[in-house]
Picture 1: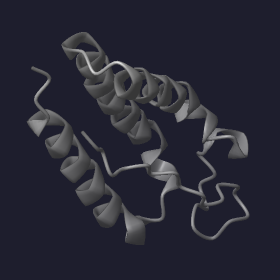
Picture 2: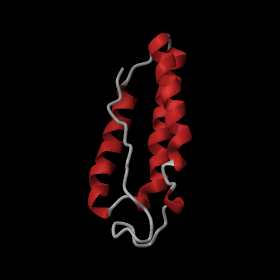
Picture 3: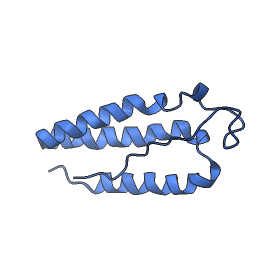
Picture 4: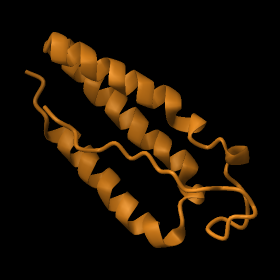
Length: 103
């Protein structure tokens, strides 16, 4: 199973940044809002690759979705011109995860 999404967004989020003049981006530390989920997903991917059991597959899938859901927390940090592309990538990744068979 492969999940082709690693949405690591690197846009600046200070009030001085024209891409986010409102500055609602966690004091510029917005990547920290999904770091735990990303780490959990990485650990689950490693465990599943080393031991591809249905239980590890289920953990992989749930942690991948948790990461993708966590990206919603930083939605306001994404420039509006990039949002539709990011939305499409998240939906595509969730669909790919849903299609993966853990049996």
